[in-house]
Length: 476
Picture 1 (cartoon, helix red, strand yellow):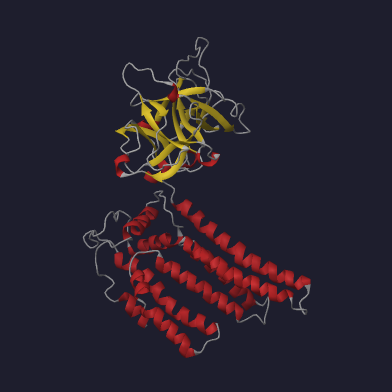
Picture 2 (cartoon, rainbow, N blue to C red):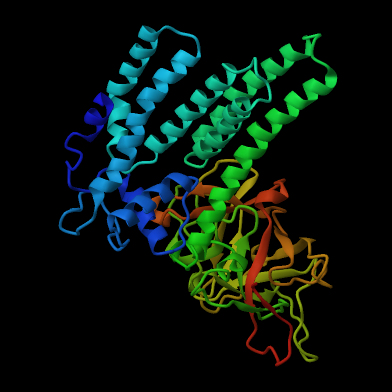
């Protein structure tokens, strides 16, 4: 009762968006509207807030977009949404008492532990707001309680109560991990205890190898299979609920986007030709598209030429035109010429007309001598130079698609761009640039880099002279 009073007293105050309610209240609304979003945390706690909001009459329209917004004026049932973490926080108090008692301590020791949890300022505060921490702590404490109770029935192996506490440990551990990833610290906590227990059982001469194997199998099922199944299950619910396309979907692959209601069907030329307009995405990092815009590099080490970055969303500044290498031509008299593995070419930025370029200048976010700045270079009546030349090295294609390992194809071909003069590869550094570069992601040219962050694929290609019946690729 004291825990409930401490956490629920004046729960309606303040009647405004506080701290990270900006994020987690907004996510609850997106669940209610089935609008896809991306967040770094697992989904369970957010879905719990959405469920409580729905029961309390929240329609998902209020967007929680900034701290200080008035809940009352927007008729948001925020008290009910705050009540859920408050009650979960209160429930951790008796759970703490029961855990300490199950560990064999006296009643007064357990009562002291429960009192400390009841009045601890940090736990109380996070229990009074629409935050993920209270569900996380609740399921974490519940996991430790179930594990402690399991140890109290070790003298009744494979009984119903033994199985109940063991399976409950796995279930609650999966739920904790489905709230926030920090709950994965439960794995070494429970895992080391389990290994110690199994090691002791090896030395028990009264236990046959077959019986020991049963103990091992039971723990593997309950403490590995069950948590994994719970974690995957909540993500399955997450994706089933978020069935409508939203702004965050644009940063994901076209194959995923077309699974969402309201998404545009993407159709692209399968083959990439000289003259094709392409949009390239960093394959492994999924951080976005090769991008440029009409703003110069402003760092002290730089050239002052046009910025080339990685941008998460598809827009016109991500489009590059494939052109022959400097001082070279291709014979198009017999039709379109496909780009092949090993070809040297240039990429011209369609919007600004400048070529992708690298030179002996350090990039914005590094002083490494193996890294070089990428820029957009060119001006009127200037045909470029050899520092615009890059070689296409196709690393792999789709084994089911003929030619995707020898000719550049949208979606199917994975490739690197190698600067022919500097012998460096177009590399995704994954570092956020300063505000003068709009906090986009840095891309540079790096020597001796591993393929993981220097692999690209063409997500969309279009050639204005593609004939009817030419191969196309539909994202599906």
